Image: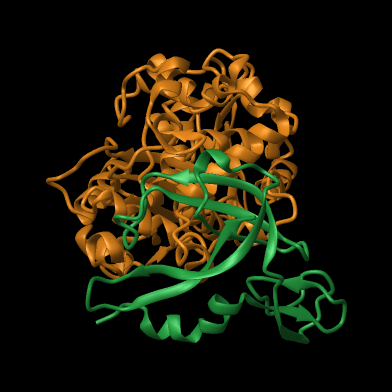
Amino acid sequence: MGRVVVASVGYTKVGDHWDKSILDLAVEASKKALKPYPNIKPDVIIVGNMFSSKSSRQEHLGALLASALNLVGTPAFKVEAACAAGGVAFNIGYRMVRSGEAASALVVGVEKMRDLDTPEVSLALSMADSAEYTQFIGASFLALNAMLARLYQETYNVTRDELSAFPVIAHQNATTAEHAQFRKAISVEDVSRSPLVSDPLRLLDCAPIGDGAAAVLLTSDKLLDGEENRVEVLSSKISTNIFSVYEREDMLTFSATKDAASKAFSEAGVGVEDVDVLEIHDAFSVTAALSVEAMGFSKQGEGAKDAAAGVYSLKGRYPALTFGGLKGRGNPVGATGLYQIAELWLQLKGRGGLNQVEGCRIGVAQNIGGVDTTSVVTVLAKR
Amino acid sequence: MSEVAISYWRMRARYYRLLGNKCSSCGSEYYPPVYICRRCGSESLVDFEMPNTGQIVTYTILREVMAGFEGQQPLVLGIIRLDNGVKIVGQIVDTPPEALQIGSKVKMVFRKIREEGEAGQIYYGYKFITL
């Protein structure tokens, strides 16, 4: 099996794109990713998206994008796995290129969220969990994560300020990230003073609603012969958990993430200690904490405490959320997994600007759908 | 025209009587019901009513509700461990939020979940009250 390179990336700013449609956004990101290699025509186009049918009354995004890019004839399709759609789309593209089935793949994540009002976005996101047993009784995705946050704080004696550490890190890094939705620093006091939306979670514990698209061009290394300073995919693994969090005996272990990370690290031949830069799925403060614990960067119950101690800050042991993460950069759900890959690419290429993690060689992205119901862990390396 | 009238009708016993299922081989009980026993892999499962009392494992007061629940905020939601050990999620009603505690005993009650306007479908199901 061949080596797979992330040749180039493209993305839009995350935020309110009132004047752009879901297709406008996908095309903008795709053109940016394709531009550096005008001679590469992707063998396949894969679109990661969660709820275009609800936000835009549009499905069939693969052929829609292929046609818009003047790439008619190219196999193209949408992949959906709730908020992990982008990561899963990337995984499929990677596997197709690695197997030799495709010499190149354009993988695009896109989500249009702001055309819907907040209760409708909340309903759309609730479709990541059971329609019959969770959505029916009014338990939104926010509510599920809030209940998890209370359990996490109670079980491990995690304080309000410790829980706030991940959002504070995210916003700090977003201040210098041009594509971030919120380029504004916040303090732990700001988090504690922000309105309760589903206690104990406050507004600043939660990733915002925004529009955006991110794309990557994956190629076999043979297509890029002679090119120095490549970003190579070492591994990408998907795992799944028991569907709803309340059906699990141990609700505080993200076992899909644990399983995907363990397999991805093993295949890449890297250990936790080798990781230089980390993009985690911080949809909520508690999600970030449980994610670093599941991957082994922190001990169980110590993720938020480690964040408060600086472990995940830009200059810390494991720099995370280096362009703001879901909380600061934004979380256009189906695109999120590809923003993570694009940001790791910037880091490993040394193009991180003020957000650069010096000397980084190994980057890890973790993208989840639902409450760790689907998890994708990808390892990239500078070669 | 109701969006989900048929799917709701299909679920009536699940919602009205907490009808889950039970593995005929190893006795494991489930709500929501499962197709294959998670513990022993058996596909021989029979419908089985859950006990109607349990304890609060965790809870939240949701202030920003999703579409369909407008006007009902705040919603108190909890993960309840029923007396047979099965955990389910449900609304907790008739209890002042400040009286909620992890470990509080609760009992299932039959209530209206939501309605689709004055002439629309009314959805009923389970909620919990503290004891």
